[in-house]
Structure formats: C-alpha cells, structure tokens
Length: 555
Image: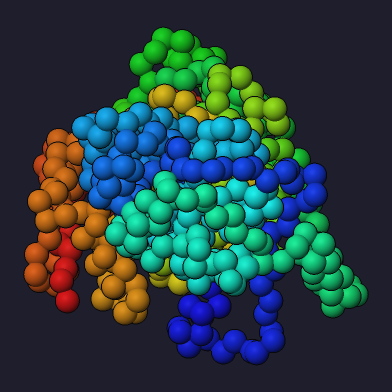
C-alpha cells in the first residue's frame, strides 16, 4: 500500500509510517504440523477471478499428478462468467477423477484446525490477485502450517525474507504456481518462519498505542447535545409491502428511539394481502389522531418510487428512510442527527448488523457486520462502500438531487443515489457504527432482483459523470465495463413495460438519450377526502421512469 501511495505521487515522509504484522496471541498458537508430502490441496480465498480461482484451477490442470489429488475450497461463493463458483468448479473438474468440496463461512480458528488434522497432508494455496491474506497468513505462520501464495510485495511483511522464495509462486502465473505445487508431491512441504516473533509484535502494538495516547489532545470538542424542542424535525419514511408482522417490528424499533422529535410516514407499496390491509386500516386513524403520522397507499411501483412519495409528504428538515424488514437500533436517529449537525453533512449513512429470522434481532443472532467507508468513489465503482437506504438526508437536498430513480423491478436505487452524491462532491458522512439491523431473508430485494440489472442501475451514476472524471476513474470504469458488461451482454426488458434499461457498448463517446412513455403507471385522480390513508397522485417532483440508453465508451 505504501508503494502504491508513492507511485501515485503522495508525499510519504520517510520514517512517518510503520507496518506492524497482525497480533496473534500465544493462546492461538499450536504445535507445528508434520506433513511429509502433499496429499490434499486446500484453496483459500474468495471463489471468483479476484480470489484466484481460475488461476488456481489452471495451475492444477497442467499436471496429471495434481489433477488426481483431492481439493478443498474454503471461501465465500462468487461468480465467474455468469456461473456460480460451484458450477464453475464442477465444470472445470468434471473429468479430473479427483474429489472436491466447498466450505463456506469458516472462522480462522476453524480453518487452522482443519489444516492441522494429522495424516491428511493438507497444504494451503492462496493465489488471489487482489487480497494479501495478512491476518490468515500470520495464523498459518504461528501454527507452523505450510502454504503457497504469490510473491506480492506484502508477503515480506509477514514471512522471513530468506523463506519467501520457498513458499511463493510468480504473481498471477498459473505455470509458476503449478510447478510449485508439483514440487510438493515429491518433497516435504516447507514451513516458513514469521517475519517477527510474537513478543516483538506485541511490544510494537503496545508501543504504538502508548504513542497515540500520549499524542492525543488533552481536551475534545464538546459533543452535540440534542433537545427535542431545539432540534429540527426528522421524518421517518417507512416503506411496506405485504409483510405486516415484520412491519410491526420495524415500528416497534422506531417508537423506541432515544430521540423523539420525529414523524413517521408509512408508504404502502401496493400490498394485497388482507392481513396487511387490515393492519394498515387499524393503525391509520390511530396514528393520525394521536400523533399526526400518516399512512399513504399507492399501487406497487417499487422502493424508489415509494420512498419518493414519502419524501414529498415529509414535513421534517431531515428524512430517514427505512424498510419494513429493518430494525433500527435505539440511538439511530439521535446519532444520525448529531453527525449531521456537527458536520453540516447533506447525507449521513451508517453500518448495519446482519441477522436472519422472523423475530426481533438480538446480539445472539448477529451473523455479520457491514461498515461503510464513505465517499471513496474508486472503491464505490466495484463495491458499495457508501452505505445504504437507511440514511439520513436533508429533505431539500434530496429533492434537489431528484430523489431516487424509479425503475421497477430493479434494486440498488440507494447505491445509485449515494454514488451521485459522492461523485458530485456533496457532503457524505459515514458513521463507523452499525445503527440498524439488516434482515436476510428470501423475499428481500437483494434476493429477488437481477444482480446484473442492479449493477447497471448504480453504474449509471458513473456513466453520467464520465466526462468530468479523472483518468484513473475513467480507466477503471472502462475496465469495469469490459469485465462485467461484455459486448454481447445486453440487459433488456428488466424493468416495467414502460421502462427498459439497455446497456450497449460501442466505440463512441457516451450518449444518453431519453424518450418519454405514454403508459400511465398510476391513476391521475387525486385524493378527494382528507383521510390519513391516501392514494398518491402521479404528480411528482422526480423524473418519471423512461427508456434509457446508456452507451459505454472506448476512448
């Protein structure tokens, strides 16, 4: 990383940085495993091109001896050329005559225990063309486990200098990796030594923290104190579609907020389930009479349109978006608002904790955690590092930005909106704390929409900004286009009958044309009775869905 910074022209002060290996405690160390000869190859990494899966299989295919050995794959699933990692492995190894298995979601300690099973002769291969495996490598080193990886510069931060050449293959070379593995079938696998011992690493980490404490300011700015009477009103826009039991939990989490100066606008996105309709009828008048909260109903137009409806009816200065399957942590709104007031941010996002199941979440159900980086636009082209729809945004800013796009049947409208915010240089602050629970289930947006269509949606933000991007962004965007949107890959008819997104690749510069449609999505009649449960109109401050042609470019 330091080398990359220097290559990019950063002024890196000599002696102004230090690289300290990950700390592995003595309790995590075990005796060295004796392996006389390679009997099983263990792939470790993400099961995709970036993780080195294709490179790894190419290296094995070059040797009949290697093809006869059992292979274990440890890592999260991915895709290669529209095939799942499982399908790709099965296709590649179909005629090899060897056995293979895939193991997902293993802890580092579980990986170490698997590799240490006596008599199995397991050797780890980490061929990633992206990752450094620093933390995992340190555990393998401390436990005396043999492994093979590529000779990326970062390996010298972990392995003793004189041992590097004995456990590495040439970077991104299947031939070199194959030769290294073949050599292990006739000789005892070499066990590398760590760059530094546990005591030295521990002392360096302790020394670093002592220096940080000593250099910290003696006093910090006073934290922002919130008072319901003095702080601006926040509108919570809650979207629902035929999930009344989950909706009840979401409402429960909203009512439990530590900051109480908020209103709720519940937008029902075309529910048809009678249980849902009964519950909406039940709460509509109660909310309106006791709290002034609103329940709005409209035909199913998907999340972007439903959220925009809620935003138009909001009276708060700030808006917090929420879905019926979400569960807010008690200090979510308070934290969001403190950050917004302190930083003058246009948008504030946060991390979330993941869980599954139909019940309210707790720490025992925690399965994973997502934390956003913020407005890192290069990273954001490859992965959502901005946050998600559970954001706080100034209402006026949201309207000026045009709200969410309203494509039907496609996700990532929040990813697209946040990409626009970051690319256009607006103030986006990411809270490095999970402020809500994200529920994983089969009917979620991510599970029921087409991934390629979703990706095309958020990429529009980058395509539209292409002429104003620097060379690095433009180059990465072209590379992303070539990798994920090949010339013969056309996304068509993925939205509604009135909205089609087609991605075309030509040799011209970017061209964006828009043609309006004549199909009316919603009835044009307005609400005539002032009841709290209303049907919205088609009048909108936001762009209506259109047929969009995005021409990717070669320059």
